[in-house]
Length: 224
Image 1: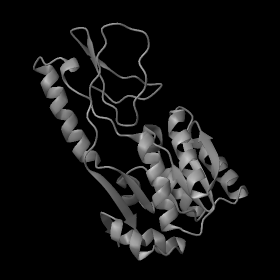
Image 2: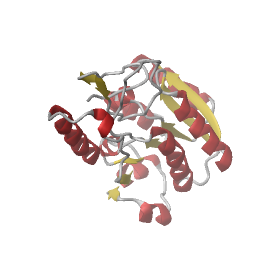
Image 3: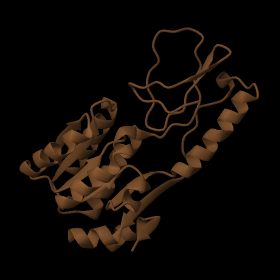
């Protein structure tokens, strides 16, 4: 059982079955018979819209938002975000990057587009590169919504997503069952049950942003 993305379908094959773990998103399997999947989905599509809603609630005066995505990210994440933006009356500026060298020019493009905030679409690559990304957004004084709490603990403004330690603990039970002989076909794909909304007030102060009390009340954790 392994992390999977659209371009990196890491997999473990056992007795003619494939077991997948979906920490970022799910995808359609190609035409191959006798394939069964199992694991835990992170609901990246569904959460993209929710993150944009929370960003708008936290910063009610914004109208232009930069969308930071990796070139291999599933386009469905973007479609969900665009639909949410239309409902919220927000104008999006899409920033697609392939490697860390693209970050600075992408954020310069956001500045030129007069983006007032940023939302990051789910990407394991962007997660591994979060420190340079956080540094650049801080330099630009750009409030941002990130995909999980690790970004906020490292200085990001806010995040909303599944509780990853809980997801990983549950993934271990899948691995254990399969190694003991259970067929992945008999194990349903599960969805996260614990989500967390985290806000960093130190970062808000540095950005000159005032988070409404109604949003602070919704947060599962506020870093002060």
